Length: 74
Image 1 (cartoon, one colour):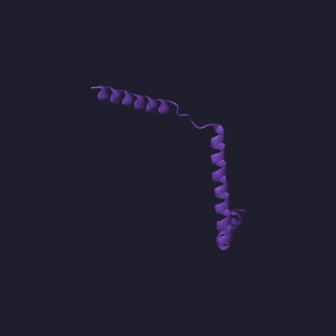
Image 2 (image 1 turned 120 degrees about the horizontal axis):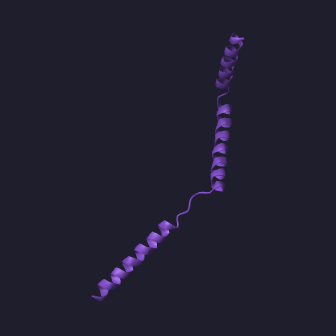
Image 3 (image 1 turned 30 degrees about the vertical axis):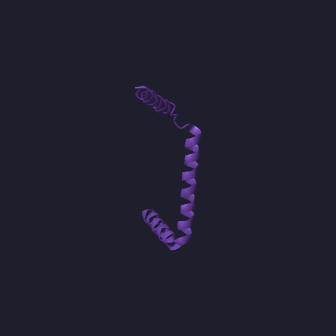
């Protein structure tokens, strides 16, 4: 009988510890969002630079089409 009571006490302690961990959960603050934004912008710039170096003729073709469209409007 003492074993069952001790086991129930242990289970209650584990349950209370788990609930306290869930209650202490904190949200992200502004600094973390700014850091994430900086990482995303950095990755986007890096990928853009690599793509531009790998495919310059594609960018030149797009530029020519855009300029051709603008010139035909004028």
